[in-house]
Length: 251
Image (cartoon, helix red, strand yellow):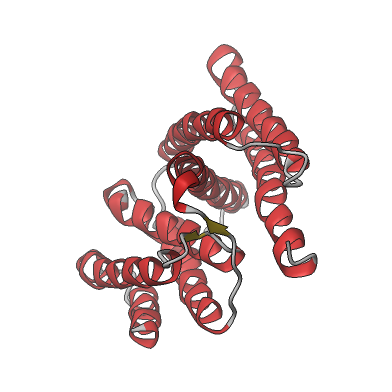
């Protein structure tokens, strides 16, 4: 199943110009990926949210969101996400990390992790959208846009979609922070203080960006810069922490 899922993801990339193929083959790939996630995460001891499982789940969520938003002209992001999904599945099959949540603590902490992954997925798409937006703006200013850029929606549409995703991502990030404070006991003992601080900083960055956009009309390079800064801080907080604790310190 792992190999088939990888092949299906790569087939979507090859035939990404055809939306029907994206929807059908991409749908099968995402469905098989969900089954693999279930097999890896749901264990007899509890839910395993180890590093590679968490990464795979986030990439799966991004792929699912892109497929759902395909009519909004975001299929070009598939060229980035689906190959990453294929690589992630391959890595997940050969490397094993564990972060088991006992059944008695699974609901609250699992909701925190789920809201975190949804937030990171939406803001990840926002970051990719910002990169495409920057490249699109550069190409148009220099009057030699390449075919991929020509296929993108107008800049105004791209920017509107970017702010919509940032707003949704910020809502889920807020839920993540709230549930983390409520359900996770003893942040110091679990070495999660720096993750929480970085997540709060990222939340502040995105909040200021939305405030600046709706209050002062921030657009263009300012939008791109703040989006990428917020995303970098957020990823450092979550995956940087998991990487150090699980793969280096083995905690």
